[in-house]
Image (cartoon, rainbow, N blue to C red; front, side):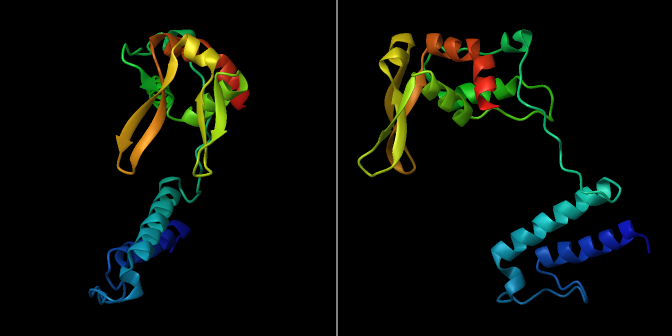
Length: 182
């Protein structure tokens, strides 16, 4: 039996355990058995996927080598600006949608927000509950960033949103954001 065959055989056992099946006799495992614990089952599914990747890669577990985030000026021209103010997270989502290379890291809300703090567009403050948050500075308000109260699953919260002008500011400064992140 080759190493890949051994891995495939082990994967078949893990798959059965993940699905609550005894790999020895193919009988269903009792409901109260530890194998049927949802956390254990999720672990089995994860290990099965890792083994699948090893098999697909000829016996080597290769992690994708991600390249740093970047967008050419031409790619940036595809950014869809919104006339309705949008959160910074939506700007990040729209920038990531322009990425054509699946091996490229994504830009995150945090990357943009940290840069905005560094250029005095957002400031960090402590809320009454002791947690920290970010809010627009006067400079940011002047270019079109402001806060809105919204309601979500966990109740009311405040979000920083960007009008079209502020969206353009972020996209126009994308190289500086990327450089700051790296």
